[in-house]
Length: 372
Ligand code: GLY
Image: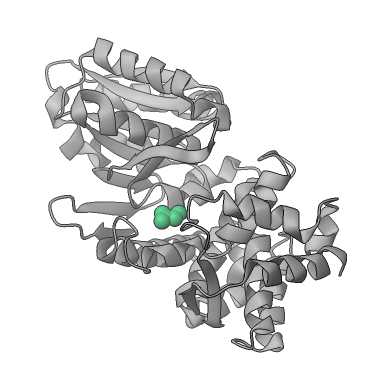
């Protein structure tokens, strides 16, 4: 078991990692269920998959504690992060009579967590929520740190709020039913922590990544806990990404976002896969600038390829050129006027924000990578 505090003044909370947490939620989340004494109904939001897998057990566990779980179930996929579903969810919460003292439970991956977090940021001007992340990606990244959002016609995650959960409960056992492809996509974010800030963790992942992907309990818990400890530290120091610190968590994301946009944000390239390839490109571009050695860039690429993640841009079979990918980057929400900060590497385990990157040079670099 690991308990990792996210030390935000006035909004501090714990991330708890322990096998079997979900099966004893009434005890694990007891402080956030107190308000529901007297038979009040506890709101749970899930997608059809997590509802099918866990609702019966949670209903029984809560019933034994004298509580009734009420469910709002969305279809799996990004479509749930929409104005339409947000409106339905807010109406449902208001009809349930949710108050600012109450907590809504988000059971699912990043989509459910982002949707619930944003609904809870605005319902009654802010009520509480507890994250119960069920994908590796949500466990090591999106459930921690308070970024919440929906997608709109203008792009992904452009409407949202910083709204911190009251608690994050991570049960690694739930990853047993996660498809391997999604497990690998989440693992890309684990590798990200090693590459951006912890060379020893990166080396540990090079040696033990196969155990993490095979869900070996000790390796998995170590990987999740180390990732979250770094994220908690960064979020506590730069909650709203106003310094360059939280931005480090975007390593691989600028290249990755362009690849997701070019592939239509579809199953062709999952977010974590795009981040993986984005990190290879960030490492290779850092080598092109002479900031890391070619051997280090190759090491980063090898760790990503060894996890079965996409590591070669040419292998994606895109028909666009580098300029088209750069054009997608210009619409990235991290764009600052006409410039775009890039997350690059000074070493394996040391990322930094570069603001002097010439987008014409990025396009030329990508042209070469598209055919390499
Ligand atoms: N996923 C990046 C962040 O939470 O800042």
